[in-house]
Image (cartoon, rainbow over all chains, first blue to last red; front, side, top):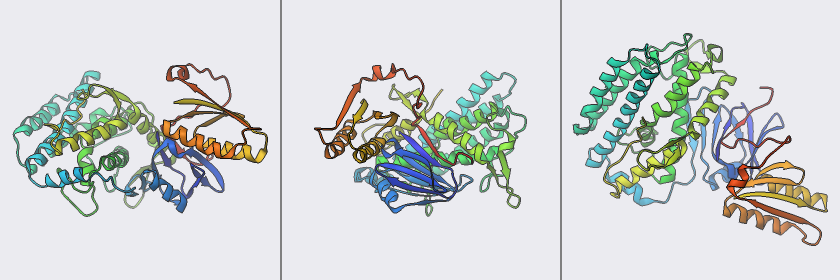
Length: 334
Length: 95
């Protein structure tokens, strides 16, 4: 099963027989069986035929729209899962409940531990780096998580940990032509930030898909507060995956020189940096490879890919909220 | 399940139709030969769709099943390479 990325501007997405059919300039540029597809992502503008829309909805294939730069615009969602019990449990835990505090602890712990493990691993690979101070700062943020019982304080710990991580992120980039000072977004104003933002948009498409399958309401989160049109739960569940997938892909793309500064363009007025057409393709391919790569799930003890892990983590969360398991185990990889 | 499907259809119009259906279920590897990786339901649906079309006295369709182990051992010299079905790009060849 794969994701279709429509990178051609002004493409026409149609359907023939049981296949998704993409045309541009009256020529067919893609023709894939719908049974091989589990998501469609449109970058930029595209026309979609009514038949294709209803077929995608029918087959529960989510369709996501991203701006050319990778900014998330919205998605066309199939009917939400009928599992009312999951949603009921999700709503019952809203606010400062015991369960909400527990899962927020899990999200924050997962994210920060993955940050820490990433720094430790880089430190080992490149002994010339001096990351010890940042690792200590991260550990100071991780230590009080389990005894902190207010969601706001947990948000503070998360912020402190992320700040520590991003203040040494520039040291992880081994390519001299790229620098990173601080995280900037809306719009990202340097290549590294633009890759991170693009990666997080792609990750959000995948996590939101997993959440829908399990039957959650994506707009009610615990770590992220509710805001009109913000899929807070998707953002919550993303936390532990950010360093594992997106940051890892960004770093390997830059450090292995798979992307060079020639692949970025700056928009003169807003200084927004985005990828060129070629660069975007390279990055999408790397992201897809990462998603399919396999590892041993530390809790379930079996092999799975990151793509499967999105759904597994969402199911574990559902089980915890419905009281079937004692704890929510965030995905932490060594 | 992994299925190699080959067909011999006497009439052009019907052959095109069958070819078109098969394209929705797997990869076209040679004239009249498809390789498909299907679930039980997908296979059943494909069978049903083909069944409605063919004339059994003049046409023939064969389904050869390969176990996962044998499928991994298939040697392919030349011809269509198997596509990577984890990611699809819709783009124009000349950019």
